[in-house]
Image (cartoon, rainbow, N blue to C red; front, top):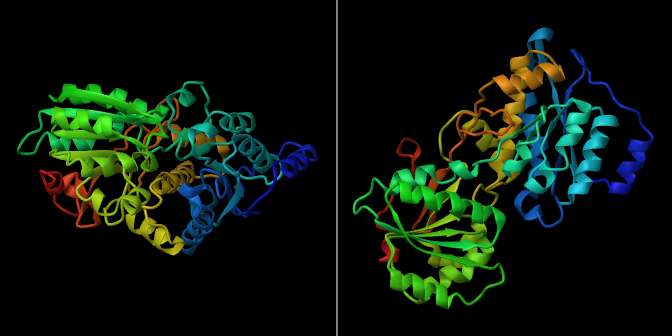
Length: 399
């Protein structure tokens, strides 16, 4: 059941009537339904997640399964996974199939805000609790849907909380900041929010530049930046578009106390090589950081051959699974309504920290960890109680 075309799924749906949840079942496995983007444009982010799903269920079942209080025992977990091919309309078709043909008990997933708009109404229609993963657009959570929850890590308002907490405690203390932003809705939202927060923290914004995804010659922007002499250069961009920017900053010998790239990844590191040394960035979680379910998660990542730096959105996926697992145990029954209520009322544990949902269903407390590339290695440098290395300040390679 790795893959099904939209046409095939539609035919299956047409042949089947609505399926009732196995409310109160104490004999059948608990079945989760999900899609991942194993193919298509988004596959580079989650191409190993289908295998990770099998490993997650296996690890839960090694512990006996999910405890269901009303049954007085643990029940095994099964995860039904389909490839949505990175196409939102396929997602709608496949979640309908899982609801009406596969008779899943609960939904985990999908990812990406493009799916977060059309797919949750399927959960609402069938009254199936859904915990999505990497879905962060705020408008998704303002529609009054009651069966939809999500664990994006982080949300825009939480993106750089720890970074600014960190830099404002350093000596020499930064005074100025310069923003360079990729022309993309998410990256622009990050800059819009955090440029204001930077000013509130006491930093003076002395420059702000926007660039298109196709831009290769950043010379005019870099020369303006070099002339302004900011203490912090804040790059709000996805990895590939900013590669020539950072390369040209090195070539033109830009100096700063720190260069901060909001979205650090293995893709960026491989393309930049030594030019990425000393750069800071944010990530939901990184191997080696202690916390609830951290050891359990690291074991799954190891078995699935997933490196968090190469697949930085994986923890949001795992967090969705951990939340659903705990919600079923809190509800004490394989009961959709009780699990929905448990999701609304509960606080759930994850390596990223406690997860609690607002009225719209979005996790709103989770903060990211601040990373720094030190001697070619990824290190967590903030918060201090979770750090795997001490921040090097000022960043020596940008001096």
